[in-house]
Length: 74
Length: 378
Image 1: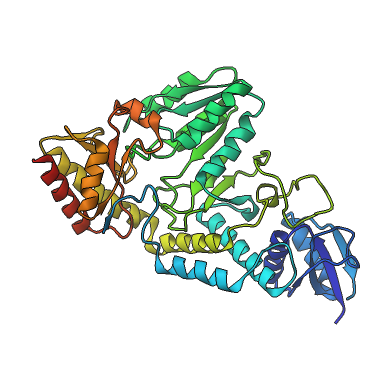
Image 2: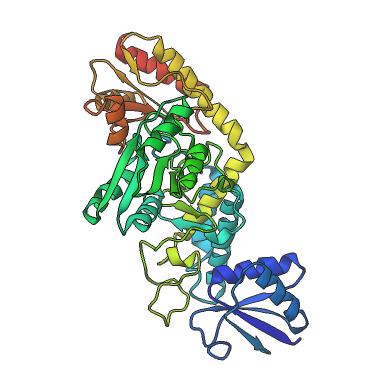
């Protein structure tokens, strides 16, 4: 499945994002960011199915979860 | 042992609190720094604990729940943060040294403070007393929700309204009240500082600083947060801004279970239970010769469940020592609150404090009263 990743600043925001997305029926996976996925050091990514990315981003924006970066694919 | 020192820390901790702390220690590592399962497990523990605390105190934004090593740390953060550029504060005459010592230390930076008299049961007079202390340089009102010595409860909702009417911030010391008295961030408090290990039944070494939606403060401590490590600038995002260093994961796990324990028992029921014990003690002691009490009869609207007394002719520590020999644990002396004792005229004697908790029985208080009676020769 094609994935889309949001980069957030901390594990707190990663888990907040996961909770918000889960409430909306969107599954997500939290991983530590790599240099491939982001220029931001020491951050976390929240991965969702690419098809859900737009909806996910809206939800995160509505709840003031700051997105530091975005990335397609694995 | 009959344990009546809950104002120092509640004992025992509920089994579920002990279990949660132990489980966290066994099944998690350092949160927010790594991507392995133990780090993420720790992150989940902390996050869920934050959610639990936010819900308990009626907060919509869980990132404004800051975990600290204790209420003293929270108060130091708030007080230093609000007064680092100088200014004037208004405090009550009952404040703990966790408020008074930071203020005293800030005198060298030009900070001054005025002390408002408190009138137990007369909230109008108390609020007016705070009002009369405000001047053009006042930045903040800092006050206890309930005295750790006399149990006197301040009308913090009205004091909050007063503060905001004058464009001031309010910092509430909820060390004695969190988990015992109703306390909601929906009332508009700017900062509430709470101990995790008293009325919230968490492990010692835990505390909370609750920030209103608009409240901005500089952190007391800066350092590693596990986030944006390339930058030497402390993050602005909450809660990281205030949570540098490795958090007390097992303590926070226990604290969350303590909050759930209070929720499961019902905060109102716990207050009623503890106040009934304190009222019983007051009624019995007030009828005894040789016993000195310092407050009117406590009631649930004007007091927290704390009662202090003295046996005439006995040093308060001596009384506490004799009670300890009889298997009754209390605290005597000045209770880290010289202000409260100066207000009551007990700065030279101190007092003996009784503070029950959820696990204190009526029989515990009956036996304690009997022991006091025997010591007093009443």
